[in-house]
Length: 521
Ligand code: G4P
Image (cartoon, rainbow, N blue to C red; front, side, top):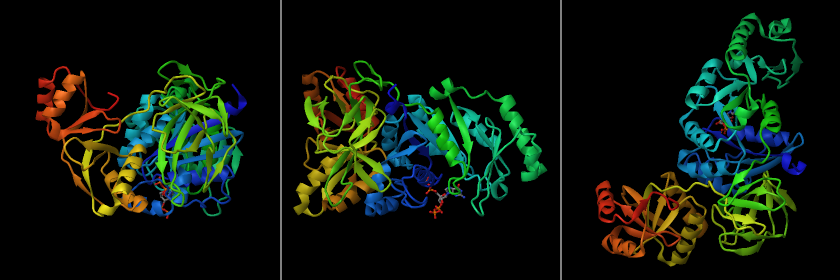
């Protein structure tokens, strides 16, 4: 494989809010020499934890931009870290981010153990067979027992664990972690932050007792026996299939165990992997360039009303200014100023390789899932589509801003967070979202970015269906169900069924039609 491609590591962090994602990201950037001082990037960017947090993020746009994707070098590797919001109302964003990566870091808080949101996200990783590395954070707190945590990962997240390190001591009395493979002891000293790595002969090395005390060492030895004797040894093949995960223990805020974790990513996580398209599999080191859009973000820089499309490059490389083929529209386009994201700044890059995530300016051309190639007509598959579950009518409160509202609704729906519908019998647009918090974000962003003050009135609905079938039948259905019918942005007919009864009746009366739950279905 081309060495430039081989050194790429592209991953996302999967975690519950508050597990320490922001903190660990800072440390990564610090190791990558991207920020001078850990603690420098202090925004909970893109965390989307609560609406008020989101609004704060809005005010600090510069930082949230950078955190969508971060590129940093470490130990000869080039890392692309894709940010994922922890809150479940924004899970679509996370699902999409997971389509763009080759591995994931699952971050678990030692006190709370595996949390609900992590379970959901882990299901997506499993579906995609994403290789996982687990970091159990906050070991400086009195958390759960080590074996309980491992047990929970295995039983709740359904993945075999292979601990690479084990802690000695716990909470305030944490003495350090022992590396099973290397037989080294990594000392923890929260007071002066000094860390030492000491070579040991094995878990019976008398120096361990000197450093940690007999009781802690005895407990550790029991755990060591259980782990090395009773659990399957690490198997790289199983790791690559997403069936087994290396586990590390540490404390992000104390910068303890973070370097070992990054080393593991460099050594164990795969370089860019083969990707599927509707025509054939694409290997990363093919000469021909190919990429897909997995995220679109509008108005990242409020001073220049812009839109950025985030590309995952799947094969080959491209040079700034090169022309590429936009498969959906059949047009050739020039990628004028691709950007990489380094902490607070974004910078224009001249060259990018398979595995890289780059941002490109989007003049309104791109949609999530779009494929770009050197000319070949193929489309990457596996970018999920989500059926919205909550709906609202959008009424404009300051009527002079109707143009802005139209623009805002269109642009924000192109980002993929909300879907926009045009009812057949009303001029008032309807929006649909997967998570309710997105309504608040939509209202806020329409106001702050487009100056459109809106009221969102909920439309109670059982579910939305894409109505497909012979044209005549679709037309007849649209007449009969006109009050509940709308057009989506591709001008497909959808019906918002108010209750299950109406849906069942429609399915019975229109046997030639299908009522799909997503636009792709
Ligand atoms: P998130 O992005 O996953 O939501 O989590 P974030 O990094 O913001 O961390 C959540 C809280 O947990 C922060 O405290 C952070 O300092 C703390 N934290 C992170 N890693 C560790 C660790 O290893 N040990 C301990 N004890 N705490 C840790 P906060 O009080 O919410 O914020 P701040 O005042 O520290 O900024």
